[in-house]
Image (cartoon, rainbow, N blue to C red):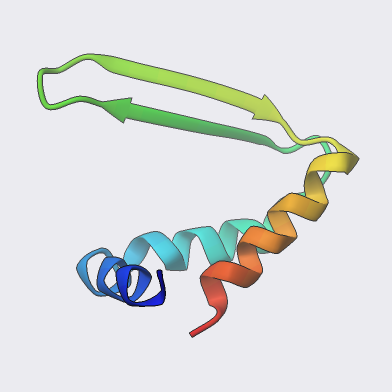
Length: 68
């Protein structure tokens, strides 16, 4: 898993940096939105308002992203 993440980080260096910065800014009431445009042009989008219960998971994800 670690080697896969390192390869991902090398291929897309801005993505982990974005998540690291965003995780430091997320607080209760923040809205996270995810959008995907498929190769054939279809759009998928969802969002969620962060609750107090969500913050623990966000912090765990931040730890996974920032570890080398």
